[in-house]
Structures are given as C-alpha cells and as structure tokens.
Length: 325
Figure (spheres, rainbow, N blue to C red):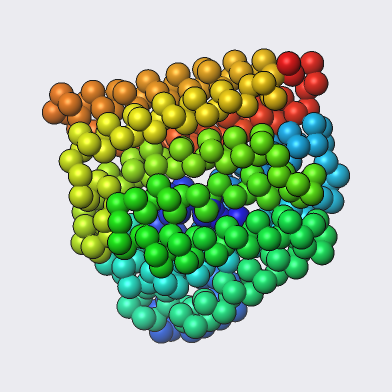
C-alpha cells in the first residue's frame, strides 16, 4: 500500500519525521537503527492508507470480515507501503538533503552520520516488499498480493524515478499509487475487484492533487531549491488554486457515484463533506484572487479530515444494513 500508495506520496506527513540521534557518541545501537528504519517507512502516510483499506474491506464484505483477514490485510498493506516509502527515501536522499521539510529524514540527518546507511535502507525496503507479498499471497490471496506489488512498483518506478523530477503532472499520475489500498482491501475479501472499489480508487485519485498541491504551495521554495517541478513551482498561485477547485469538484462528483451501492447514510455524508471541502477550496481561491495570503495548510489539514470522515461513512454504511438503498 502506497497512500499510492502512498503511495499517497509524501503529502500525508506534512512535517518531517523525528530526527534520530546521529551523533558519533551515540553509536549505531539497535534502538537507533530501529527508530531510523521505522521513520523511513513514513508511518503517518501508512496510517492514512490503512484508513482507506479497512472501510473498503467492510464494504466488500457488507459487514465485518474475519479479524484474522483484517489483521493479515492491514499488516501486508503496511509492509508494502513501508517498503515503497523506504525505497523512495533511498532514491530521494539527495533532494531530501536540500529541502528543509525533509532534511531531518534518517538518510540525510547528521550530514552522513545517520544511524542507517543507504544500502541498509534499500535492503530493508526490498525485504518489506517481499514480506508483504508473502503475507498477502499466502494468508489472504494472490490477487491482493499482486495489487500491493503493483502499488509499490508504481510508486517507485513511475512516480519516484519517472515523474517526480520531470513533470508537474508528477502527483496527478503518480498519486495513483496511493489509490491501490482500496483495491487490495476489496480483493482480500472477495478475491476479485468490482466497480465500487474502482469508484473509491477514483475518489482518492482526484483527492490527491488538491491535498498535495496545498502542501506544495506551503513548501514551494523547498521544491524549487531541489529543482522538483511541483505545480506550485512552475505555475502562479492563481493557476494552482483554480486547478485545486477543478479537481475538488471532480472528486466530490466521484464520491456520489458510490451512492447506488452504498446507500442513504453514505449519500448524506458524502454530500455534506463534499460541500465542506468545496467551500474551503473556493475560499482559498478567493483569498488568492483578492491578494491575501493563501493559507494552503488549512486546506491540507482539512483534506485529511475529509478523507478520514468519508471512509468512516463507508464503514458505517457497511455495518448498518438499514442505511443502504
């Protein structure tokens, strides 16, 4: 799972991971190494990915799947996402050292004296990916394992290596990595992938650009210094705000496509939450048009709450049969 997938790429973190003690006197104790490895997995992003996985499993089951299957799927998904995020940190350690937001990540902290070495980080990420495949394949099913692998590979090769440093469409296309957890969750329960899972995939796909562009507006100078062409680096705030509004409307429309399957409780929640999100997106655009400060982190933090509450509505729909159509 990569929050896409991460793989929802670095967005969900919003702030740098805690710095490990990397002074020469501290040495390379097992505790420091474990802390560094854990930080490389970007646990805040994994949390957000799991928030989308469990409700999808409930919806696929139309109730509560076995606790064993839930534990297996969430564990395997967290491993896959952690592996992808760790490999991302290995590849991007050069630009992470330039950007203030990421300069305290374990592979760049302490000017090369960090508790973990690059080769160790890469090996750890690969091992996590392999472990995720085995956990999901042997204990859930091989379709869910294949989808988790696809998310990891997409995040590493398409987003991190292919798009991130080359095009402003990096997060639009690459953000698909963070959409795979819903497919993994659905496949773990049913052994197939059906259209409600693809609708949820689409919701996260269109949610990712407004979510991440808001963060990138805040840290525009960081991305510019690292020569990463995030949209706020190459476009004016007015253009970025307009695109955020467009993607927000498409996202909300996509959430409503699930109503025939999910029912009236979900419909009411999706409509109310959508109005909340759109109001803030338009408010930010209005502030920019009027020459005021954009305050993009307000939309960024709201977007995390929005996605969490939307998927909570999906979970409620699944466990309360009388709320369905």
